[in-house]
Length: 278
Image 1 (tube, rainbow, N blue to C red):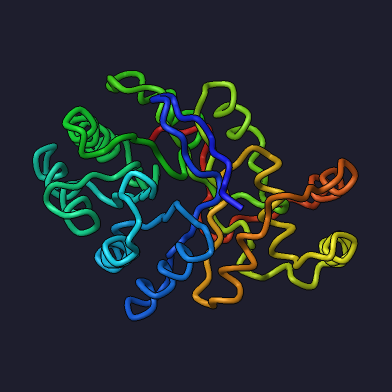
Image 2: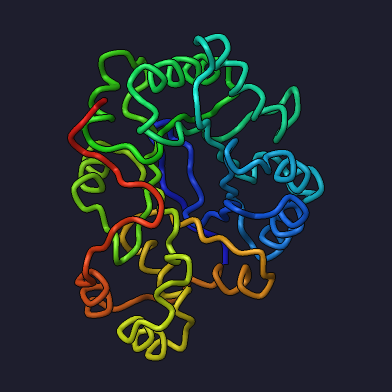
């Protein structure tokens, strides 16, 4: 079943279900992306820091799909020496994935913890590429409320289209998620499968048995019903297909309440600071 979409401030429609390629080895990335396309994914999430943008680009060109029918996101991890150097770093992602005349649907600043000046340089470089049509949308990742509000001091494009965060029942980041929803910022969820660390959780397994689904399908569906765009990752063809089977059925209100009630734990990846803009 085709993925529903979330509307961005630009009016563009982001396919809710994305395919993540973090930690996907170069020799598997293209193959895994092609598997994802085959079973209906139309949204791929990569990053400069993943070192597999070219492999994603290869899958895009080999897929036979129309470019307009595939959503590609990447992220910049660190700024260059100045805005022009940062612009060139961003442009490198476009060339590696979509070719000299191509574009990316979404570019994100990967991590707010790099500091205020690098964040500003990256955003201003991204705005330039956005204006030129090389980035259809621009956003952020791992940003707290203070970081997003601080952008107003220099950003021509605000709010950011997206804030990508680690999100799952054990890390719901309610404060920043609520802020994003109130400010028309689409929320994307990375690590929605909790890196398989909760596969034996009794509540999760009980809910999965009740619906005749895998625990991974329950976790992805949970994100969809929270209004987030989940980005499950796998290089296993069977799991890639399974993780996409999250439409046409629903978790009940009680299921969602039980998952919402999970104890909140430390992030697997990066802690988001909602107070500091340092």
